[in-house]
Image (cartoon, rainbow, N blue to C red; front, side, top):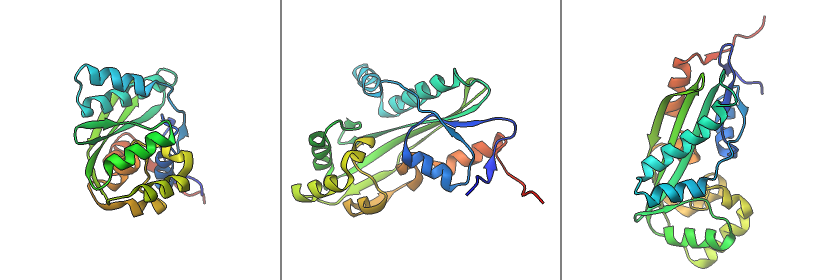
Length: 210
């Protein structure tokens, strides 16, 4: 289906390779291009954490660096950039690199409530014009090793694309006891906050051709 909503005389670019974020924009009928920003997220996160930065500050920093990278290449476009961190019991979790790490992450979250810090930003004409932080919370069911292994066997390396190694979408829903907060932020983009800002800056419904 063709996009229904677009910006006038300007491209909208999502600075992410996340399939979940692309799906949210697609489902909302928004015209956009996708150009992932190549930054070393793990190194930046670890350096900021070692300097005492809060999870909120780290998520904002990573989203900003992604947006700046793409805005420098497309100064005449509007850029959406976002980052998400998981915090549980004071521990900051990023994306796993191996199945062993993924298994360990889910085991550590099992039976507990954690927070997803999701930062989203807009850049226009090469500068940051808006940002928002959402903090939804999720509680895992108590999971044994077999349940975790079965989950990872189903999702495979897709588990490496998410902090905490999980997806709320599809069969992943069986892992969770409850969620609190913005569902869309859990998936990677706080759409309820983002859409009014896009409309404020010109996003409009395209007229059908006669």
